[in-house]
Amino acid sequence: MLANLFLHYGLDAWMAREFPAVPFERFADDAVIHCVSESQARFVRDALARRLVTVGLELHPDKTRIVYCKDSRRRGTYEEISFTFCGYTFRPRRAYNKRAGEVFTGFLPAVSPEKLTMMSRRVASWRLHRRTTQDLDDLAAGINLVLRGWLAYFTAFYPTAVIPLCQRLDHYLERRARWKYKRLARSPRRARAWLQGIRTRNPELFVHWRYCGAAPSSQTARAVSREAHVRICGGRLVRSPPATRQKPMAIDTPQAAIRINSDTAVLLV
Image (cartoon, rainbow, N blue to C red):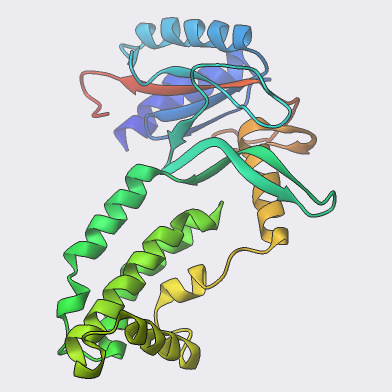
């Protein structure tokens, strides 16, 4: 709350006044600023550093970076080609254009490796394979509350990135079946077949089956690619989201984005 109040004046209002043609997004003390070239990115970064000094803040020396949005159209070689924002890692990823029937590289977001590891460790801490006294309905009711929030957020873009988490969950459920039923104890194959039977009869039992049941269609992948480019790299016939401003504005395709993280004596980064 303190960061939002302070940076609304220190960053948002200043950016809208000094750089009205440069779109940006901010969440708490993290921000992404979209620039059309490396030279513009450096200019905005230096101006922003001077601005923050006047309000008693400074750019974090390690987290402030200029990132090149590399894809099939932008093929330059730069040291920084990825960044993480709001739990999503933006980097070059494989995508498919159904209309053209070709595979291309897009600068797309997906759940960050750190968030995926955090969720996997949380799942491991549940020790699902040892909870043999609960029936599946009770087990699902308890974990679905957490899984629903995770997957609703982290499948908004590039949903296939969460498949390893879904596979881990199924693995624990198979281990639970082998602990619970003697006929499955020595046969992982039978345990997988048993779980698949449960899934076929009741596909809504565990919420991760709904999100990770099948690979996304090409239509979904295309929608992800289009919106991700709009949000991060822009396009000539699209509008960027309003973010912290009142009105979205059309932008040309930028070549770089600045990853900003402010640091002060009173705000925790």
